[in-house]
Image 1 (cartoon, rainbow, N blue to C red):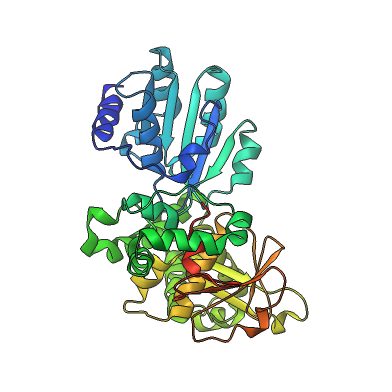
Image 2: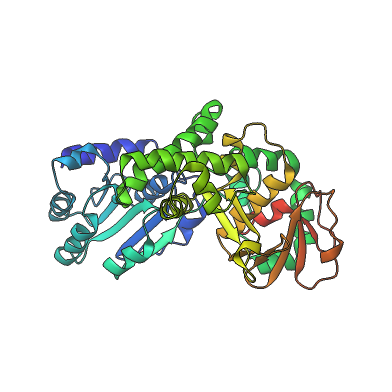
Length: 394
């Protein structure tokens, strides 16, 4: 047990609590069993360690365990957890559970044998939450998304704003835009966010940041996918090939059948690999509804603008950057549907036309609940708003 406690103490030394992700305040920490899900690099580990440091500090009542540690090749998680509980431990924080075989069955046994033990676990977004809640019926599950533009402003100590609900934002967007513009020069800050603001580890090594992002996509494919789904090693190369094809062609990626033909995959394989990339939030895919399938508009984006720029260095297409930012931010707190005319339908209520200042927005000018989200728009006017405003909602 000493080696686990030593690792716990060493990790806490490097943790600061001056900036916390939006999810920290949303989690009901008193619940007995809590699951935190998210893609590679969003900050799940930091969230767990911040909770320990803020509430327990150096108390032996809490313990952090990384289930991906090689130590768990010789000792079962449940045995370590039982030793911790027997010694008086009350709160167990387990990271990377999806990489530990049979974690679900051991967790259920642990719950039964230690009914007063509080457990928080973190897992990849690839792990289906429905599967977890079915196996652990008392689990309260949350998803940690990439940093919003609002969080980035706080992280950079530029501006502290509370999250603004979308309905309130759209009702008061002129005033909110003016207020932000009065306090900071938004344009260069927003560009910085698009390049490196989605993940909280940028300052670890700014020069290497694009390569770290590429590594995280690789790890999601090579490590997390095989940990969650039965897959042959040779298939991982095909998933990476698909990822690179998509990154070269976003947002107008060929339909799956065409991609399968180019990659020499069958339809079942291509669909499966595409779903893996979506679940890992490496990509986001939207297809309009209604009419014949072959006539429906479809678009595929990389998971966020940081990934887009990391894979397509020098990209400066404001429409692609704007649309990628839009679907990333909105998908994290609202329902997003693609319409056949290239607009987006949000929460079955709002229509958004996304673009740059050179586009013609007349067709949404007098439409109720219709807005233009514009990359390069300096301020809000009528139903036109700077696209960065939509990054203030979570």
